[in-house]
Every structure is written in structure tokens, then in C-alpha cells.
Image 1 (cartoon, one colour):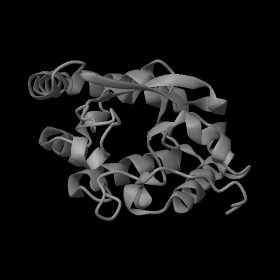
Image 2 (tube, helix red, strand yellow):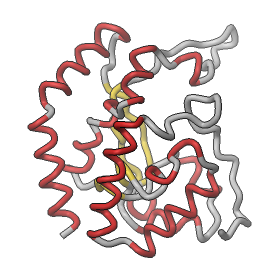
Image 3 (cartoon, one colour):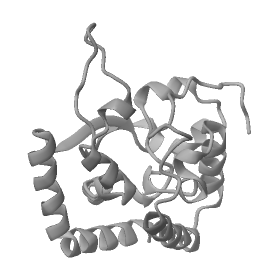
Length: 200
């Protein structure tokens, strides 16, 4: 049932917002150049890797040693606008159609984080990752990593169609209000350093 809902809603959104998606793609190409999409390998169901798609929001700026500058320095004005209204997430509907993601589930993080999770935190990979999730409607980037994982594990252990529909509705409200986008003064979450002994 969840898969049917994912396919139905994702295909419907891709059709309904096709013009907006096209406009965003053109704006990214004009303002930031190629590539239009940001593709990065992330862990999916049971940690199996897949490539997550998003519209680019950052440019590649390096220091004198060739290291990438911080996210805050590389995030463009267009990128901030796309993130504010979650427009950069549209390409993930393709991941949902392909069966790599669900509309609702724990957000897919970085592959290198896999070895840093506690046994309890690792339960977040027992379901398909989502475009939105219980952690996203309960703080998104404004909460700590530990709080995020607590919300993720709660979702895995309590998931239902009713909860999914509630999360989708709350996500719409969050997007309209542009809540939880930043972590303090930072535009993105800090790097997760690991907490294997944390069992919350």
C-alpha cells in the first residue's frame, strides 16, 4: 500500500509541477552552470547504496590548498531560495519512482556515517529513506543529530499509512513557513562525528 501511494503521489507531482521543475532547471543552469543536478551516493534500504538526486544549490569554491570551502560560502542566493521552499528536492521524486526512496522515511545521509551509528541508530535503515520524515517535521536541521535519530527510530518502529499522511501534511506546513532549515547560524547540519555508544 505504501509503495502504491508513493508511486501515485510522485508521478502526480512530477506531472503537476513539470513547468516549475523545468524553470528551476533552467535557472540553475544559467546561474550556476552545469551540472544541473547534484548526485551523491547515499545508503538506502538496509544500507544499500543508491544515487540521490537534487538540484544544485552550491558552487565549487576551493581554498589555496584545493579544499572545498564551507557550505555557507558555497551556497548561492538561488540555492538559499531553492532550499527555503524545498524546490531542490523535486528530483528525488525520481528516486521514489525508481523504488530507491519513499515519500516518507528517515532522510538518507552520507555513506561514511554508516560505521558511526550505534546499533539502535542503525535501525533507520530498516525502511526506505524518505524525502521527508518524522525528524523533518520535528525540527529538521534545528535539532541535534541524536534527536534526529531518535525521531527516525521512532518512525521505523511505529510507521503506518496514517502517520505517513500526517507527516506529509506537516511537511507542507513546514515548507510554507520555511521552518527548521538552518542549524543555528549554519545553513546546513554540522558533520556527524559518531556516537556508537548512544542508545537513545
